[in-house]
Image 1 (cartoon, rainbow, N blue to C red):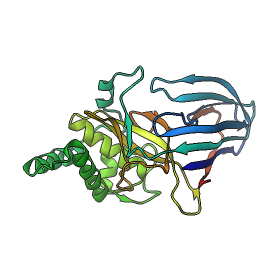
Image 2 (image 1 turned 30 degrees about the vertical axis):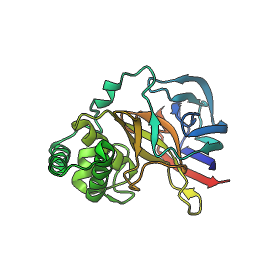
Image 3 (image 1 turned 180 degrees about the vertical axis):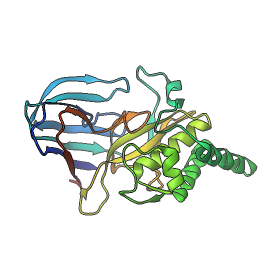
Length: 273
């Protein structure tokens, strides 16, 4: 499936800022299941200072805001050919050792709620194991997480911890992924966060990008689990960035100097060609 993506993030300030710095992780990469046909990132109100690959092998553009800017607009646009690989991304590669993906972060540190969920579900599963092995188990645990956290936009933000989202019982794809990552790591599975795009089949217009999890499964390598939709990623999904949690894989992260009030708007279109 050929997908066309137009992703625009606008930062507006009520007065000119003294300095601003942004990290962009917007560039998808060709790899198993996807081929980038074309991609460009445009910056209005800022200058691309350097492009580098981070520790998780994500392409990062470092952008500085123009002096006294009152608006910075970042636009990523391109076409990606995607094939259905049943969610299997394959062998672990890169400079980061596999064991690092069992590490807790501030966002995914399990409290009593997540530990109880993971341990109770694992014990219940062992009483009546399924022939599907780890894959079937992880899909079932994904469904368990979704049953505990209703999809409700606006109830959490990028600083919400997995334990707090589970306690609240509401959240979005970020929270589903964080709780699933935390539970998987509790049980010894290396797991990572994935940010990207999903062609939803509706109007093509979205409020934000999508997020899911990948777990390293013996014999298969990295396998994707979209907790929010109860499936493994297929040919409607475009992978962009990975990391231990949403902070590592955020499409745009920024900081600024000055006391200006900031507002952010996101416009995203993912359409099948």
